[in-house]
Length: 455
Image (tube, rainbow, N blue to C red; front, side, top):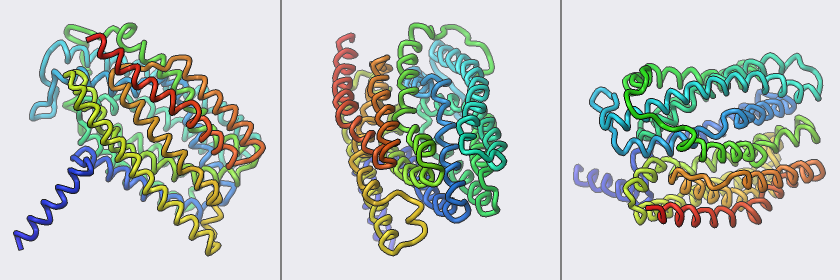
């Protein structure tokens, strides 16, 4: 029996190795897998317990809080890549505290303390700008009674989560990917349970606020209590060297700030456009389908995103052959996993429509969903490419990043206004095919050439 169980274990280990699944990817896949399963259950509960109109407000809430990209200015992406380079000279002791080169630790501490100040201001600006702005947008459909108070509480909880987010990125960037992904798994389970209870008990749009509030509270507890030894050095001023924000961080940050603003027009504009021109019911159908589409991208990207700290460490060691091999392998896995998931979703949708079930009418038509298959493939590849060049602490996209985003925004607005959801998806696919994919390939080669020429 032991021989058979050992053979099975060895077979599973071999398959996991072939698929590129280490502990970090294992927890990331579990977390994203749970997010996908939990998201599917959430979609079913939204369809069951919310009216078609309220469903539209539910997904429009989520699109509007994505406006935080205009105040955080791209720093979360910078955090992971910057800290991974410093971590090559640091490590954890048995108590979970940071030990190693004093200068590297001092620079890391100075970075973390400046992040705290930056994001405190960003959170305040988010509340002052998005709370009234979102309310004015939603008020165009009248009847503020059922959505105004949940909207304001949602914004407050999102501001809290915004302030905490860089510290979670800093922790993960210090090669604590396994611990971070394990936490995200348990956090995802907790958040979904709270959401489901709220939906089932008739909380309506208050469910969105409960979801985000639970996420913020769980993150604060994990980083402040569970990982307290790790963050203790950040309570004290840096002892020696400090980062020069203007020289080391800002050149990458301002480009990512532009990119972050552009990404709103690329990823989050669709539901508000449909809400404005075609009403809350159609926005709900689009939002529900788009959420499933986005979750499947997140699941596939787990294979690459969990390796970003390793990318940075390989670059710091100048092991570029290892970097390129790891990136190519994980990118192929990411694309393959997305395609499998999207294919299964499309097949399920076709069956729902064939049997004329109510849930099928809460989603977009299968023809529009089929168009999301090549769209998502290109989007995953573009995101993987961006992760590659950002691991070099480089962001070659400056104001030029605004060009594809603005073009996409105009196309989504115009095509979405006239042709609804199908027009909005066609706009995204056209932008990816004609602009984003060729540009990403060019920039990946340019960053690689320029970085290695400096060595």
